[in-house]
Image 1 (tube, one colour):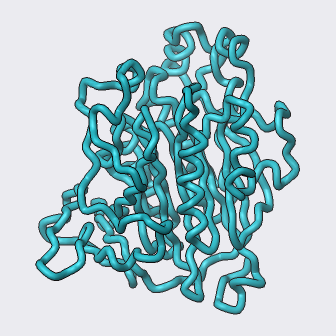
Image 2 (cartoon, rainbow, N blue to C red; image 1 turned 60 degrees about the vertical axis):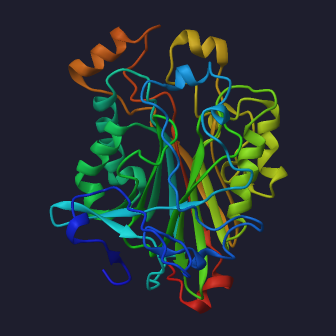
Length: 392
């Protein structure tokens, strides 16, 4: 695989990212990659990539307990400006996963049409291993992804979910993975992204949100386009519930700032759009909403991604909501949008246990409480065709 710098020998079975110290007089490095490469990529007044890992919360602090704490800032000092931290992504080689050092790769022929998939897999619902395996089996069906080049994002991943992702044959065969471990998450759960091997990955990095009481961040993958251009794809899980002042506006604004540094950019995930202001956050940040741009209507039941696969009590209390979104900007257009997952259920004895044991009772053994979403995109041919973007 040309353009990929494989980290071998002693790191062959080690998925942790070493942070080599910089030599005197040289720029700091992160995972062996010079920070100077990213100067000009990040928003103005943003420091180059952090050479220190974000601390991990103590194992006894869960998300439920975190909500009762005065704030994560009192546990760990938080920076006043975004701190993007570069990291590895991984490829399956032979019989194991290899870390790949982020860095410029030789630009492959990028298809002008591709899809982005996002799915939140509830980390609290019982039978987490069985549910995640069922979700992966569901996504592995070619009918779900339509045989297209599809970037897949997951929200609310826990450590065992990442292990199951690594074991999935269709993932091993066709995808890069970021991440294999949750060591870069601040909370006990986080995001993960699967990127087709056919796409030339340039960089992978996370940016913790400056204002988050739940340890939320955005995971970005930069993909090389011909003509020295960049497609930046981000996966995020914005702050849950209500807050005073609200957290989500500042979080999406930070994500949008990073998006606008690329020629084309997408961010997707559980945006927890539960308040009126959430309906216009994309407009406030000069972003487009793939669902709305393809004919969807705000408030329509057909667009709801949460509420169908929960207990009757939860549905009556909270109703339906379009919590999950895919937003974009730059040199691309949304060509299609759909939901999926209403028929993703556990079969057999496991399904019966889930229905019977879940507090409040489920009507069906759904693998999660969120519907998945998928948006089809097309790069603007007038911008990239002359530079060699592959049309399909």
